[in-house]
Image (cartoon, rainbow, N blue to C red; front, side, top):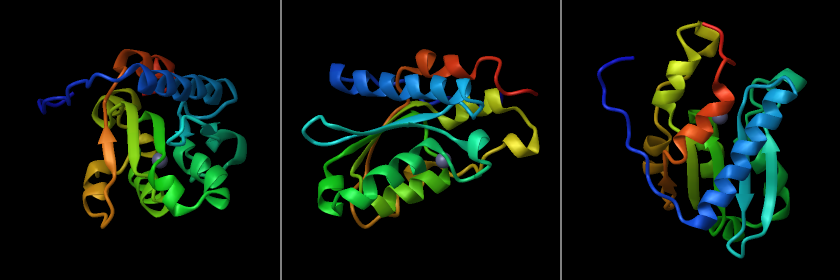
Amino acid sequence: MNAVALPPQVPLSAEDGRYLRMAIDMSRVARARGNRPFGAVIVSATGQVLAAVANSNGETGDCTAHAEVNAIRVVSPHHSREALATATLYSSAEPCVMCAGAIFWSHIGRVVFGIDAQRLRVFRGERPEQRDAELSCRDVFAASPHPIECVGPALIDEASEPHQGFWRR
Ligand SMILES: [Zn+2]
């Protein structure tokens, strides 16, 4: 690991913690099905779970089948941008640049994530096919004309657990 300071863990409300744990549960489901261990949940302003999905890279062979994109594909056809602007997307890990772009297009107004990209890179290692593009989702959100609140990293130990022993170096 390099010498750059890791982002500090942020505290969550009980409600946010419950939904982020649901996303972490989906990351375990993803791994059990032969996919990369990521999960995402989208919750409406009134607390309705609109989607709870897993990454499906391994099952589908689709390199874009990240949990956040899969979740947005579930909800986007059925909910207006105005409704999604008040929704929250919970992700077991910090969204990648593609998922940050999908969150932008969905108009989802709030993101809560578990393990951050820097800590995840320690698990990913240096294999080229496992490395991510090093552009923070916060930089993508900062470029958005509509506000996208971003909360994380949170529940780092719990969010890290499904990555233990998964990424081969
Ligand atoms: Zn992604």
